[in-house]
Length: 387
Image (cartoon, rainbow, N blue to C red; front, top):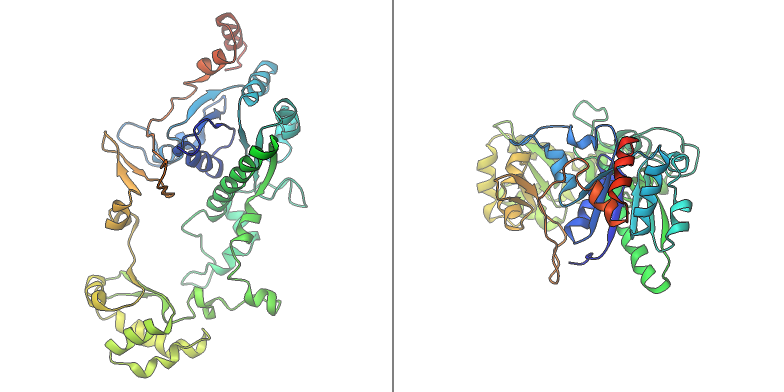
């Protein structure tokens, strides 16, 4: 696999870092997860549990990893981590800015002992700037980055997005940054330090949404924008059974195909750009029309129509969707537990999901022995509360 031989030391918690390192593990990296000394990774306790007691959240972010626990507030624990870092290619942390410095495991300290290391810090706002000391998770960064102002519910107020956008984007951008640094290291022999901000990641993901913001220096009217409900052919419509369908392509040949079959070719012109009030007659007609039949009836109606159409699946329906099943994005292990698959499909050396999950601190002693610690030293460290 692509990342075999790469050792990753992961100090992060919750979603961005753990997802990033799981993607690396799926492609062959050895991922060593440092869990908090009291309780371990919070994902072990958050959300619904499988029949064997494991949370789905932990399963979906920690497969194929190794677990260690070290008390970094002890000198011996800190030194053990630094020795582990000397053997690693990548180290990831997601503490508040300044915490790793206080613990003595910051990028400068660690890379002084291992110049080849790629050290990635993930934080809400980055390692500098006026918000550097401000605590935040995904939702607060989405609010400050303007994302929530565009995510408007039926009541006209901002609503919580269905996906933790800042977490997911920083995970994928972090993976890209780490792989860039590893690629560069092949030529220079030197690692790098990466400062990744969740808020920065959100802003970088909105190049198609800033037209009015940049050109006219003002907030757009959300309901009039093409991607937020201002286009008849790019919209969500309710059906008679309380479900929904979407039209997801604003190209004019889609409008022609749909409105012609519906007997309203006179409304095709209303679907011409720009989005907004001029498209309202078509939107009103489609809203009234789609409300006359069930979702299943519209699925059948669209079967021979060349248009970007889809029923709105719930999450359970999505996990049973034949396309996702065919692509292996939902699969069962030997015990019948469902897992999220690997999205990056390589023709050569494809990834492989190792569904084994680490017990809390399962690999602490074996990894320390690998570093040269003796049984007597391990016993002393255990007695001192290092692990």
